Image (tube, one colour):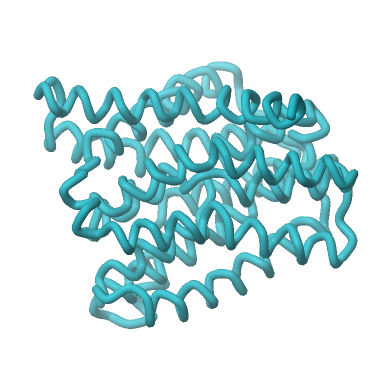
Length: 316
């Protein structure tokens, strides 16, 4: 019981502040200190500037040769595609509103890797966790963004077919920043101090601004209306998807830090960027915000439970 309580406190130390900022965003919107115009502008700023800056800085300054865990990264990429296909099939039958299916699918597979997932790994394993998680984060995040554009475009019935979808992927600021960062890191370049410090100012805006906008968009009336869809996404994100990845990961031989990183990354709550992308593409942003809120609260328990079980059976 003591180990479980310690694991729960560890999880809460990461996700608790995030939930507080979400609640603050909802409160500030309630008292009209921020409004929908703030959310609209803030969302665009996060999507186009601050989150790309955060991803570029976090990836470009790492050593690819030191962080390359090929088997773990390959597993993460393949497993993500398989999970995505299963979720698309599930959403087709369980989510009645076509335009909400992409929101549910994205909320179910897209973990908050760059912020919460990485923080989990560093808190659990220190520099070893950071090294193991960095390249996994970079490549899987690219795949997350590609699949998110595809599923949202499909569910929103955007005109233009695959050509428009591919253009959307190629123009996605998050994908552009990650690809650029990987090239930068692969060549061993280092940013000048002036540019790095300037970029860090933008990067540090990302989480508080994204969470304030997400919190301000929480709509509990919409949650009642879309409760089944939000619940489906939450159960998949916190239980079914991480359980599938961890079980298969154990079957293929992952143990220790690798398995711990896989469990922590996959059980992190839905990414704040998922709300930003849904809103930017004109989808049901209230549903996306509610999924983030529910998974952030729920992950306090589920992440601790996964780590407790894996430690109890001495797999990590």
